[in-house]
Amino acid sequence: MSKQNRNLRMSRRQFLRLSGMGVLGAAGGQLLAACAPAATPTTQAATATGAPAATLAVAPTAVPRWTSRIALEEASTPGFDELPQVWALRSGFYAEHGIDLEITETGGGAAVAVEPFQLLLSERIDFADVLFPAGFEAILDGAPLKGLGTFHSGGRYGYWMVTRNDIQEWADLVGKKYVISSPGGPPDGIGRFAMAKYGVPVDQVEFVPLGGSSARTQALLAGEVDAALVHPLDALGLVRDNPEVHVMSDLADAPLLFGVDVTYAKNLEENRDMVVAYVKASILAVRAFINDRDLAVNAYKDIVPDANTEDLEQVWADYVGRGVWEPNGGLNRELYDATMDAYVAIGALPAKVEWDSFMDASVVEEALADIGEV
View 1: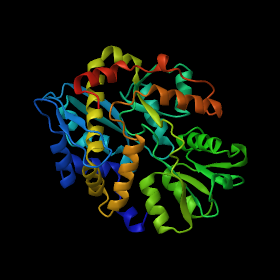
View 2: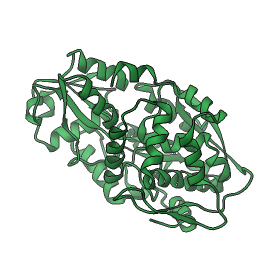
View 3: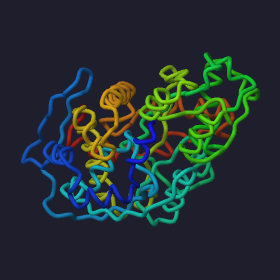
View 4: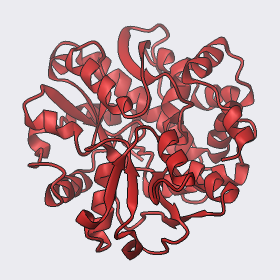
């Protein structure tokens, strides 16, 4: 990513403030137009080959009836994979579907996975995503949480492996340094799984914990480490601006779930209507971005105006093709079980969290009964 591009990034607080004031430009109007409430369900055709058609709006309530509490990372611009939820937050989309939002801002880096989880356990927020693998250790220890599906970012992880140029294939990682956020975090678990899949002895690679994505990328460019997982949009700019690194693998052959959206069990008993309404609106927001490449691209360019359009279009196709955005709430038991089995096999989890004891598919199923499945 160019220095100019980095300088144009705004904090998430700035983005939320501006979007709440209605000053983020054309893409905001496109989203509101695409997602405006209708008297009957409407179906929007895909704007690019491969994107499924999806129902975008269903007679939402005119006045918010529920309050949902969520956490957002304060210090960073939303990632491209996170954009559907973030736009839905301040575009009025959630409110039009009966949801008022209370937002708690959290720190970045390694804390991005930990703080929302702690807030959820203390019932100070209603929803968070539990990330593989380390987040599931608390579930194994009896944390009273219920999995709902994957209707935000993180259906499947959106990472590519970027390495120094002397690493041309997986076997070249032996004896090298691979940077992670923290032990047990997603880059740790995904890296171990991918290395094991491609035949790299994990104990012959040095795992270096350095925190958030910015710190990991800087360490890679400085030559302090040899390999890092980088989000595709950042990876494309990174290799274009820095010829000493390249994309060694897009990890297409190593699919895993990134995480699962959860709530605390008591919420399902006491506030089920709110939970279903929130999940339904979240699924509809995701479908809007799957269906309309131009909407997704313009939404991001409203935040980072000089972002490369071709890069955004390539990453949109990558996300849609790999299911990073999940249009039906993410009730993929086969992928869930495969992810659990993979992390148990490499020792990243001590045991499997069984689907039947953890997941409550009825919430997404109730939402889909209303808005339809695509």
